[in-house]
Length: 313
Image (cartoon, rainbow, N blue to C red; front, side):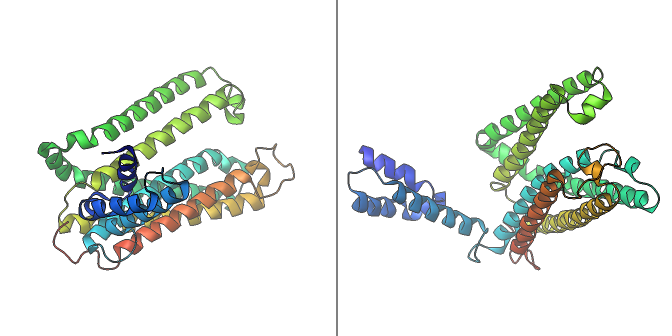
């Protein structure tokens, strides 16, 4: 095979495997007629990539109605998982921002702050348990897949996610030990170098979380689930999305109360100092939560009211 043909074959890999098995040779021949012996232009490459990604989206059930409902249910649940991962990252930021917020207000406002914070924690626990339940539900299918020789396919992402988790755990342990020798005021203010190391550790945790979410999606695409299992995934997805929506409302309520009663707290300023209720960190956190909510609702849209019309997937 000539070098141009090699380039075209690599380019066609943007399309899903089943599509390539059926139409790949025809597309390579068509591309060869268009570009000849010349290297494909950037515009041509972009058009093929976009078309291939669209076909992958159709085949996976992410868009359109051509994929079986069972496949759309699987994809919808994975979209919800990705949205939950994004929401967790935003929620971790909120947890850091809201530390000791109850000490900044009094009376009914303090009760509202406590309710919003503890309610968010409780809902996060419920959604987290739903995600864990989904993972346990996939364990039998994963075991069968590994026994059938699938380990070589999922080994790399699993090892990568495990490595990221070990790095995050080691960093967290070291940070806890170090924090014992750092004055409380420096920890709260994120003074150098503790603050920089904390941000680096938080980024490591985020990478580990994203790695596990990506690994779960990569693996779940290759597993065989029964209709009952997919029904369960649909139900768990609704639980997670409902919890995310209520948590977002709770965080917005927390922001409203703190902005009205103690706006200085949002900016880390001394008590009583005049300040705006608009804080970039809080605004970004809530914006990410709304984005995650929107993605999650889109995932539910792929699941639909009747998550399955077939017996298995």
